Image (cartoon, one colour):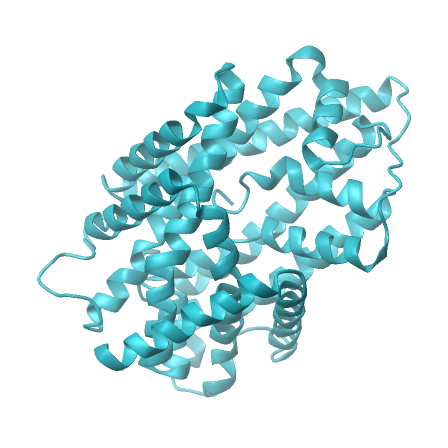
Length: 410
């Protein structure tokens, strides 16, 4: 939950309200996306208990489709995907932190770099320090959501009229809402990278994945309902304007800084989680001798990867200073979604009846959850290709480049 609930906690519900309109359509979208995401989480819960090793998606791809496929994913993750996500979160943290304290946005790059370095230092202290940050950030997120809900109920009790935003309608609006909802749940799969480090994976991983997805779904639904109570039909043309109108209705003049502080906390938890989980992929690659040996890629005793976190944070800082992280995100996202679906499809290549079957979590109603999740992945790829054809093509070229490099490594 600390990773998933981030910068989109306010903007994505605003997208639902603004583009879909009404009350029931946004709520139905959240329920649908939560259900589809839970189907994927069920598949990852089984894979995480079948292969409780550092690496997550990388390990699943290796077991299902071989070392070359796993290398291409790891190559993309290390050089593009993980630093890109880290840079985006760092910029999001900086923008809202500066807004909360009333400073000029021109300091955003320096603030973003400082935030990335700070959280990287915390993560390199070990799993204990990281876990405390994640627990506190998750607790504060729940408290802030509760504050929003209470404020919304208070406005409703005072006789405020429910919001009835008209929405833009049409296929374009629906596609935008689907993409936004998918990204709002993004990151749940990263928990698989840490399955080697949890106690009783068969019990812990399904509980964390399914429980986390369910809790995140509830959070987005409750925030959307709060907007229904709070935001009049202002005709806002951007998500930021919609959130500003809702915040002003709920908290008055203090809304801007209060909501900005809320996002700072949520993004901080996401940034710490990404910096903690991502280097596990590099450690798995090093174990397979696909990265240079002679260095400690993973300290199992303290649950940290100093060299991996340093590489991830350094590349992210470079992207922040270059200001090109938006383009980087657009390039790798379709490829990342493709590999996510491909890793889940590993279940189709594994025997269902094995001697150790009783020791792993089994996906209920299999293969229905997998089919449902793969259908979602297919829809997302079609929407990406149709909406961002250039970025999708460039992302495919990045994957092809990784395939070429793999022939030099494997």
